[in-house]
Length: 199
Image 1 (spheres, helix red, strand yellow):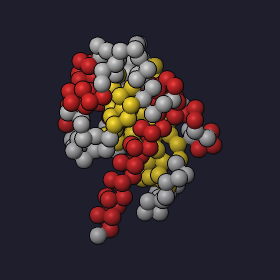
Image 2 (spheres, rainbow, N blue to C red):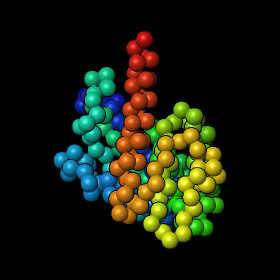
Image 3 (tube, rainbow, N blue to C red):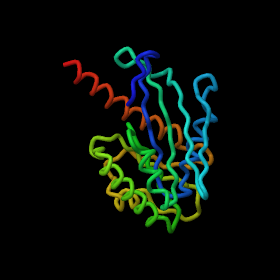
Image 4 (cartoon, rainbow, N blue to C red):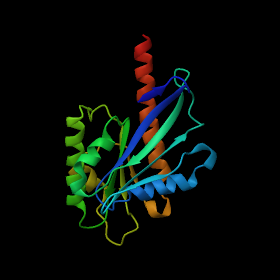
């Protein structure tokens, strides 16, 4: 969380994390396309050799001010390829919430687990407690002919207690629902922090 006192804005960061080709970029592209152009910033893409990181920010008018500040949300994806570990860690730093986009396609369970463990390691190194970080699990690609069931993904990742959404991001299904869950978790935690600082 970063506060711009001059603009009276509270900048909050949500990172979409997950294995390569799980649908992280598709999620952000769908959100961007559905958003009022007057409320969103530019969609920026940082291309690497085989992957890319994209991000944009927006002002969520439906959210009430927190401590007199307007929440401004920044959405980021991390590159999914394993050899971009350092980039993923940098993007994850100072995250206020995470959406883990799992690939429900048959044969991707190991990739999901490797990425999940990578995220756990990065959060540990960044001294961000997973127990207190709002995390939403999205099980994407539900349209594939053969998928891994959501309960199996939850069990393997040890994420059964997390808010979970089944999605078909390429069609926009479950994308906004996932974002709303992540936003609700982040805003709830920020309000608690602000209240604690006042008392």
